[in-house]
Length: 330
Image (cartoon, rainbow, N blue to C red; front, side, top):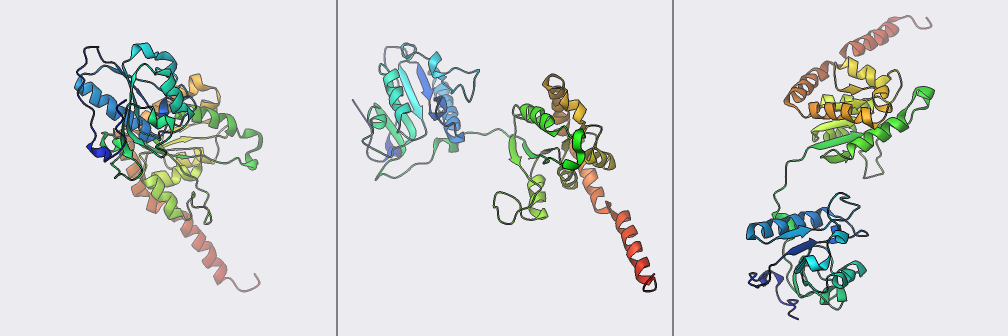
């Protein structure tokens, strides 16, 4: 077998397909294994290889883990007799999953590309016919294949969820509302920042100051929240907010949305009824929050933010001044 295993991986190349037998390639990675790990780099590198094969006019399929993409083609749907070649992309060439891949596709020409070789003696590595490694012991590393992928502009959403509050008692429907909200949100095409308004100076995974929390929301395209300060901070930053109240009959989040004259609010009753009714309502407001109209309105509310509470502060100062002017003991 001709194994390209040593030397500079950057100098290796896949020769042109000149066989008389029609070529059909199966693209796999750790994101193809049922018990594997689907990392962003694995998936992006699969896209990169698929794009290169498409440009070269080489027929190909990609196999996906049923845990990652239940509706897509899996390894179980890709028998070895349907393919001449298997290209393993990214990840480490180690472990029983990769060894089983060799067994399953023993009749195919097997190539690994953009992968890491940590054990040159592992059968997971040695059984490939060719390896175009990104890093190999003693050889210079090359840049990961995911670096060449053109990424789509994906919205960033800050998710700010409220904890349970005892004071709402039987009126709180938080668990069921959060369940329907999160089930819907899992299907939204966005990058999610889980932002907690509770501050912690000893936990680097949380914000330590209000400025840090505001910075997170300010860098988002949309804030999705069941918490009052998710709404207030989001609008103060000029970011559209999809607010969901978890209190039956309306709680402080609904009151705050009214105070801000902000329309993207769903009640606990709107969401508690179930996904068949809740998901379309959530989707409508999400799509509205992504419009220019929503951004303009949020920015207008942000412009008004400095004046928020000014009347309350004036009343507080009047009270304090009046008390200071009273004779001692009154």
